[in-house]
Length: 332
Ligand code: NDP
Image (cartoon, rainbow, N blue to C red; front, side, top):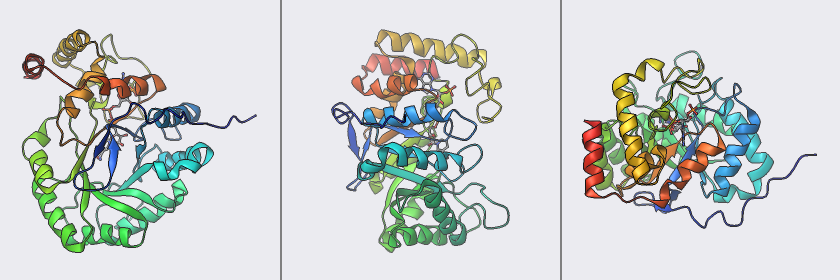
């Protein structure tokens, strides 16, 4: 017999919610992304358990994209089934996002930033998830050939059609972000959020992007905060067969990236985390959240155990100057 999912009544008791730029949106400090572990190649029951556990922990923001899987589209399809099974009555509590930008179908209108692709892709995502609207729709990557005005107008159009409540951008450079923000303001649909890659191992946003987001009052949700698992205890004792680095279906983290130098850094960071009575994953998340410009840290998880570990990072978000200095020395 199918057991109905009944969410915890305590689910809002411990999670922290942060305002997203200059908007009415508040996101959990830790959000869950479905890039990996929710495709048709993955264990459906594990995926389901992770989503429901996330909701129980107050993680109400789920981030998807048209191409998440594999195969592309299957993460949205599976999320739609899980949502319909157990979270249908809670749709108004959830912030669900999707994106278009990467390759989805053949021909000139299957990727990038044309109006035709963006609108068609959003329609397909809604169909796969069995939703009437997404809360946030992102341009997944800048298109070097389509005018920025066209891509932004397409996003604005989705909002006017009621298919998205807010819009965001991802992987846009600081300069593109300023331009996009200006165009969107003129259109009357402000840019809610930017989704850049940011972690202890990827510091590019610190150069200009975070200042621009702060000035423009745009929210920031950072992806791969654990450097796809490197900033955890996952690889401290070798490369587990079920890890992202070992899986052929995840060509984005290679075992070649786990060099002796990287391992040395991970070990030192892990010792510091232990001194703070945190796991390394928790310290890596807290280190990002110490900056108020960061609205939310968008984690991935292949088990409820990892999810629970990551959600608990909010218990200690403060660092001493000494700890911050030590982290910089390790990362140098
Ligand atoms: P992370 O850096 O959080 O990596 C997640 C992986 O790290 C997990 O799958 C797991 O790997 C491992 N892990 C997580 N928590 C723990 C833990 N506590 N202990 C040990 N290992 C742990 O993020 P992702 O790279 O998965 O990205 C997160 C989300 O960001 C995506 O799902 C997506 O929504 C978004 N994203 C957006 C992009 C964009 O272009 N806009 C690009 C990439 C991601 P393992 O499988 O080995 O167990």
